[in-house]
Length: 283
Image (cartoon, one colour):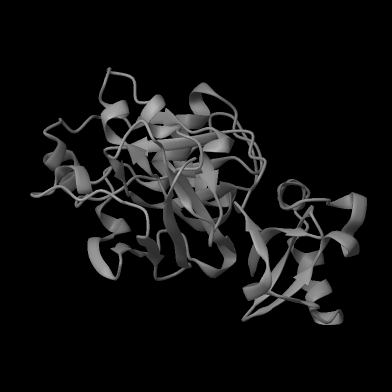
């Protein structure tokens, strides 16, 4: 299934996507699962699939105002320096364990919304990534069990304000400017993507391919990421792990390429879909 979060008459809702048709699940599941995060926590995927068989979709995807796939995640973990070509272009060393930083909920936008370039900087960079949404929570999850803890996958643009990111050894400011990261368009449930399936990940800026890799080139695999993170903090349903970007970021190109107002940035994952965001200046 493809599951989205969106606004319905101004109120948060969520549903199942089939082509351009959307089945709104909020009125069907009610208090049992008022949002996608709760559906994941309650493991109501089978109930949602049954609803799709017995109820007619009433909404059109193309007409919806989407929300980030999980609008209310408890935790967003981002993996840095997780592809060898990106490590090399930054001049850093490969580490034995994942490099991790956090993103805040308000730093994100949905598919179809504009990423905002802040007035404090013109160095707004793209980063194509795959987001993993946790289904079954846990602490000290073993690598061999990690695939069973995944609810699904989405596309992610870890938009970065580079000069703020490198101003100190701590990346938090440059990775958390308001509405600089894209998350969407939907979550593809894990039953549609096999454990360890190799996915192709690309960035297209105004149609030009600037990043292009496959997930078998990750330095720290998705199970390794889940095992490592769950060692120091319990993972919960709806938590998000953003799994790293490949080489080709704008900051390391010659000449450099940064996103500017009027640009359109697309993050494409062959097994998931396309996350598309325009760029505009923040007021």
